[in-house]
Image (tube, rainbow over all chains, first blue to last red; front, top):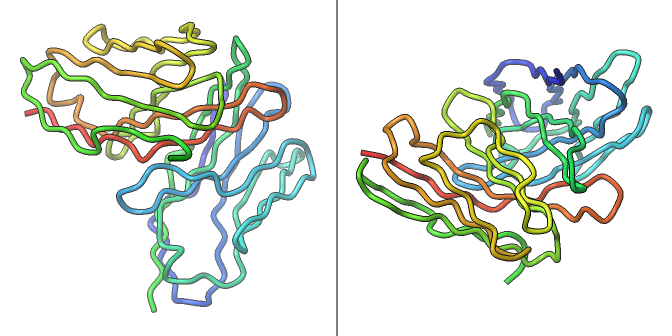
Length: 115
Length: 114
């Protein structure tokens, strides 16, 4: 079945360091891909998305490119801030019945940014 | 109010209690979802409703009973839960009007079963 694998955390960085969180997927067909972020005590927020190969999603300085050849969707940011400390989830969507979608998540990667 | 709201935010209940979680979406979406987030486990999809009809039930025990009275409201009725049911329960909604069907999440209900 479809699945998503993320690099294990926690990832600890100093402020202004570069970030890469690896994500690879297994899916039939060509799913849409997402990164969600969960700040402490909150629900999940959609960070960025990509719907087809070579698409680049971006938001708040974060970027990820849909790589069909390597089945990857790595999250990157050039300069992290303390406020970026959170748990990051990579996900793909498997389309279901009734115009619904079943999100399949990776296990999440905790990012801690120190001042 | 905008987005997806959930009440209560925190709930402590005994194993013999009956309680309900409520979710409301203000986005005009027509699909709603319940997810369970446990420590050290990936997010698990529990139920999916599309146009108020349940379209998916991911082998969830019968002590969890969902209800979707209209496209804006979703409930999760709980009874005779077990301590291992303690988790963060997240509600989400999506548009279903074409495109990516990206899902928007509420803040969750932190449930503790004692």
